[in-house]
Length: 385
Image (tube, rainbow, N blue to C red; front, side, top):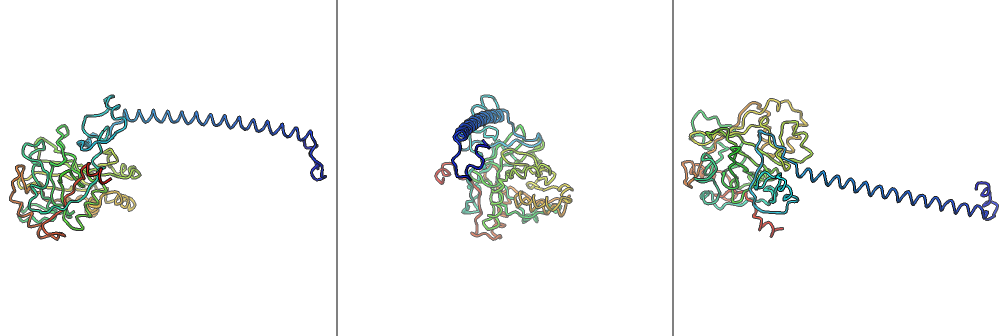
């Protein structure tokens, strides 16, 4: 071919007929071979893709059928009652294989919308002087232990200290919280002796309140963003000592860092605050509950500035404020009193008037009001969407 083609174009002659025939045949063979190779590669790609898809589906199915929550033995399994329903893929199949613990709404297998995925807002309570008829609380006869019945005032400013024993050592940074109850959406779990969940960002009727001002709204927004949820676990049969587990949602990219610092998985993107960072407890007293945040572990004094900034970026601001103060005073204890203002029968206690006096003395946007965190009912949520 090279000899036949040599210099022919430059001499103004047409290509030799033999050359043209050979060139056509050669190109035809090359084209056919290329097409066959392309078809072969295409078939291989399709086969490989189908194989990968089948393996992936099998892996996901096996994972769904065998997965259990990665919750350590010393932490309570997050459980919540089913409030509103939605479709859950393969839930029925998993139940058939006995991979669901019970009929309650749990993150391992559920046909209900998880509580934290609802729509929450702050409702202005028209008066602070009628809370026994406005909030949901554990009443006499409830499965909730008696020591948590009624409505409780979190006196984080120490306003009641003159009425408490002189030896009580108050030391706290107010987070603008006012009242808390344990009868709205919380349940009693006798197997773990825990009252849970107690979300600090909203309830069905209302079990957590804050001041009706900018600071109160800001704190609630922090709790809502983190989906801060507490679990109150009694440590013995006297029901006079409680250890509090705090869990909150954390971006998955931060999990390795938090694991290294002792945080524990609570499922559903939530993590438990380790007790080595902040041990929150409650101890029953003749006048109410002592609510200490016990000493932070000594390692908090030695962590790097980068780690401090990363923790600050993922922890709810109120928790970070307490942690930051603890870093400056490691091995210290912060505490405040929690006083019952309404008992399980709906009767006001001697601390009710003191609670009203405190709220009237503080600056609210509307005197005599406070904000109640609630979850929008599912039928209202569907109308909003």
